[in-house]
Length: 540
Image (cartoon, rainbow, N blue to C red; front, side, top):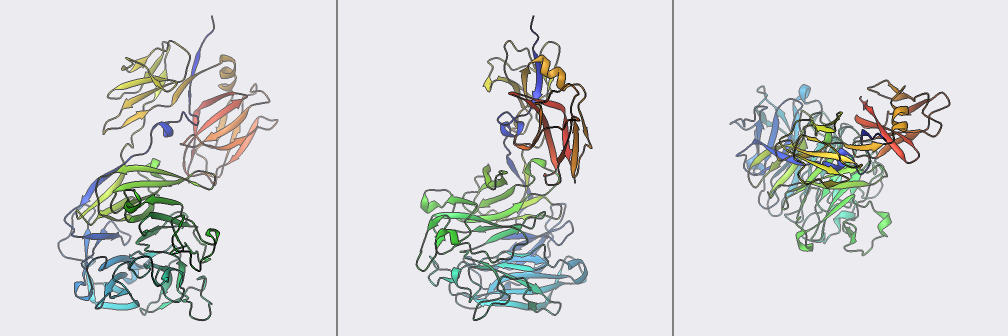
C-alpha cells in the first residue's frame, strides 16, 4: 500500500504571513493633552507632547503627564486655524548642551513662521524661557499651509517642512519658486551661537541669483509631517493634497540632489496646473496616493509617519506606517523586492484628528490625536505565534488555541473544530486558531509529498552558521541529485535567494543585505518543493 507523508511547508501563496495579515492596535498612552499636534523625545524615556496653543508637556514612561509644562510660549504665538506651535526637535547633543528647537507662527495678520532655540534649565523637566534665540523666519502670505515638521536628520542637520504659503491652488506658485522657502523642505546646520549655516552639500549651496541655498527639496504643498528611516536615512514625506489626492513621497537617504515633488504642476499623479511645467517625468512621483473626500475618498490630510525599526513587533519591522487626519486609517508601505511597494491598510480606527506619528526613545511608534487629546502607542494587534501543526502517527495536531478550524486546499472543512484532525484525502492542510484578542491566526501549510524525495532531503542536510550575519553555507544530502536547488523565502513567502549547489553539494548564500528575521529554506527538484525543518535566522 502506498504511504502518504506530510511535511510543513511555507511557500508563496501558502505562507503564514499571507494568511495572517498584519493588524495594528492603538494602546492609550496619555490623555487630556489639549490639541496635541506633535511628539518628540530627547533620547531618554520621556515623551514631549506639543500643544498647538504653545505649551509643551512631558509624558513619563509611567504614562503620567507632568503638571508643570516643559515650555510655555503662548504669548509669542499667532494661533487659530492651522497656526500655532507646530514642531519640536531636540539637538543631537542635547545631553551635553541642553538645546532644543521649536517651530511656530507669530505676528499679526496671516503671520510669519519662525524657528527658535531654547535651552533646558537646571531642572531637566523645565526649559528656560529666557534662553530663546530666534534662528529663522519667513512671512506667510496666507494663514494656512504653514507646514510643521521639524527634525534633525541622521547627518546632524536640521530639516524644516514649510507649506506653499496657503490659500488654495498655490496662487503664487511658491512650490516651484526657489527664491523663497515656501513649499519646500529646508536644511540648515545650527551653530553654537544660535545662528545657522548652509551645509556644503545642500543641492543649491552654490546657487547664483536669488535661489535660496538652504532649500533641500521643493515642489511640496504642505509637508505637515515627514520623517527619516532610523536604519537607512531614507526620507518619507506626507504631503497634504488640494482636493483630489493625498500623497506620500520618498527620497533615498544621503541623496542631496534637490528633489522636485511636482506641486503645483501635479497633485499626486494627476495634472493640477501645468502652466509653465515640464512633463511628469521631470518630477519625483509619489509612492502612494489616497482619494481625498472631495474626490470620493475618506482622506483629507495625510499624516506622514515613520518606518518601524523597533524590536518588540517583528512583523512591523521595515514597514512605513502613516495615517490621515479625517479617515483615521493606518496604512503601511513595504518594499516588494522589485523596486516598488506593497500598500496595506492595517487599521481603520474610526477616529479623526490624528496629527503625528513619531518613533519614541524605545524605537516603538507613538501617535497623537488633537481631537480627543490623547497619545497612543502603536502595536501589532496579534504579535503572538500562530498555531503550529505536529504530524502524529494518526494525523495532524495543532498547538493549543481557544478554538480551531481546519482547511484543505484553502477550503474550510465542515465540523473540523477540534485540536486534531485526521486527513481523509491528499491535499494541503492548515489550521486557523483563535489566539485571543480577536486574532484568528493560520498555521503553516502541511502538504503531502512523494516519500522518495522526502527521504533523500531529510538525510545529510546542514546549514552553518545559524544565526547568520553576512553569509550562510548550506550542505546538501549526498543523494540529493543533480537537479536540486536551494531557495530562501522571507516571511511573505517571497523567494529572496535561489542557487544550485556545487559539485561538492555545498552552496554559499549572501545574507548581508537581507533584513533581520527568520527565513524558510526550501529545496526544489523539478515541480517538487519541500521546506527543511530548520529555519535560517539572519541577525545583526
